[in-house]
Image 1 (spheres, rainbow, N blue to C red):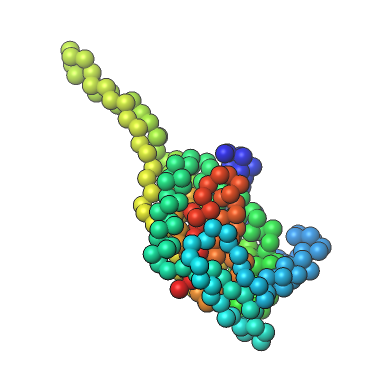
Image 2: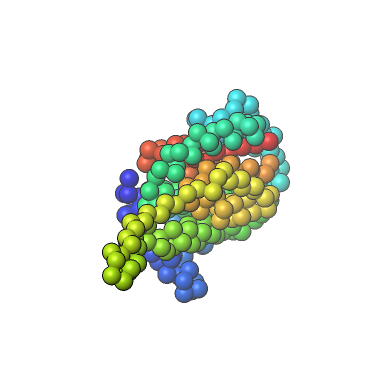
Length: 264
């Protein structure tokens, strides 16, 4: 399942180069302009956020049976959005179920999935801006930048660093040591990347997506199941709720539970 990786390879390689050279580069424009994102993007983002209000934020396959959420916008209106909630034990169990499939996926599959999720989030930056504005109290320009392109920048930077590290060494090699007149010692060695275990990402109230993207995306790139814990004011359309990474995961045959959201 390397289609996503091949599609986003130019973006990834540019990010890896910028990371190594410490230069400024971004594929995600920070200006909320219709000339960049489309003339109808602003209205579509507002409508998409309005459509989320007053209903359950459904994540099929999410562990647990409970619902939580009584958010009120700092600007006044009640959002009336409920989110699936689960106990720590339920989240950990779901993460363990997801772990084998995630660990078995190739580097290209996992990194490609992360890049596709970031690309989809970027296309919904006006939705992210409205969600961030109504849950943090930021002005729209700041909410758009921090909740959208800047969060995506940080996620891409972390994925680029993870990818560079995972391919830094050869995955296999023939080790041969001369033994004088005797036959050389020959060993065919293979190295396998192993996940470090279940990860926990705790969101913050002020910059929920910007500060959650750097750990959330590379953890999945590194084969780790992730349990994100959103703060009460976290944007309902944000990555830390598991929405976009999980839905992208379905497209490549990975388990939806590789990114499991939880509210305590």
